[in-house]
Structure formats: C-alpha cells, structure tokens
Image (cartoon, rainbow, N blue to C red; front, top):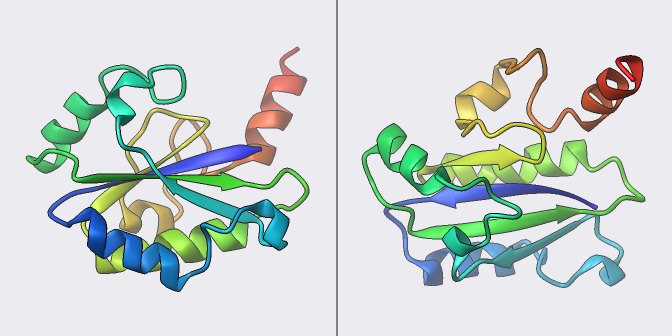
Length: 138
C-alpha cells in the first residue's frame, strides 16, 4: 500500500467528514475501490509515517495550524494515480491545504500537482519513477 496525506486548514473536521462520506472512500479496499481515506486525530505524534516537524513546516508555509489531516491509502493492486489526482484535485479545490506523498517531505499545493512540478526530479505520487530510480542506482 502507498499513501498520500492531505493537510487542511481553516475547515472543520465535520465539513471534511461530509466530503469524505460523499466520495464513499472510507469504506476500505474490500469495497473494490483503490482508495481508503481516514482521519488522523493525533497526526503529530505519528513520526514514523509523517516526518517530524511537518506541522512546523506547514505553519510556515500557510501561516495557520493544521485543522484536519486525511490519510489516503492506495491499494497495491491498483495504479491509483488517476484516483489520487482526482480526489486531491476536488478536495484541494474546495478546501485550503496541501498534500504530501510517501516519496518526498514536500508539501504540495494543488497548483504544483496540476502543473506537474517536479521535486527531486519527480512528480507528485511518482511511485514508478522512485522505484525505477532506486533500482537503477542499486
């Protein structure tokens, strides 16, 4: 499984829960969908998944505290790129925030994702590119 995260601000968790429910993405992989979305209540303490200090980087970038964090799991049996881009596109178009993938500690804006910005030579959620790079350099 691969993951992306959405760090949202100036929004209530109730409002985001309504968005998540409307997309039926919290039903889990057993529903046959490639995405599984869940809220993180205490995301700052989970430094194993999200690099320590991300909350400080977020505050510096947007001048606000994180209101809500979504963890979006992507099934390993699906590519999931189109679904991730679509889901985050709609989410970040309607709510203020940034996304982060498993591969960089960069906080991606919607504009950066849509305009194919590269960080360390890779697009957002470029799992194939990172895999190829790692196996080419091994």
